Length: 143
Image (cartoon, rainbow, N blue to C red; front, top):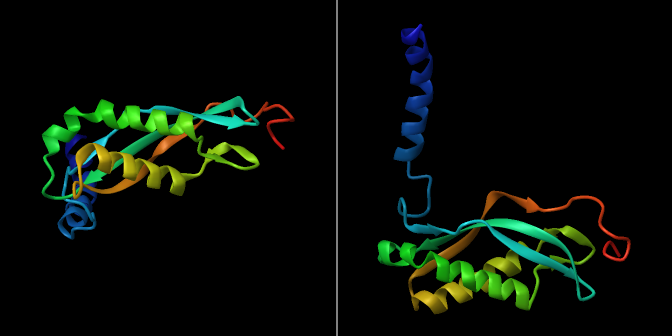
């Protein structure tokens, strides 16, 4: 039984190895800081109507000091929370989504200010997050 499982898993193992070998990733392996999940407020007409949970990855340049910036993950997370409370990243008319391009641009700027120039390559919104509530939003919030 174990032999059959090993034989059946061999093609998957070879495919995974080939994908890693072809360099399909555009970042040096492990040159990133993943932030703990953050709840961003969704505000409409000055009222809190929802929260949107995000997982964010800050990709670092190859020469960046990875250990130093991973230790400072709370600073990046704090910057994201402050930015989101100052100017919520709400999509007008849809309070179950966030404006990802604006969020990425704002966090890229904040992360670059924390690390200094030439340390941050890009910012990614990772899958797995989403709105706290998908239905039941008030009529005034859905305008």
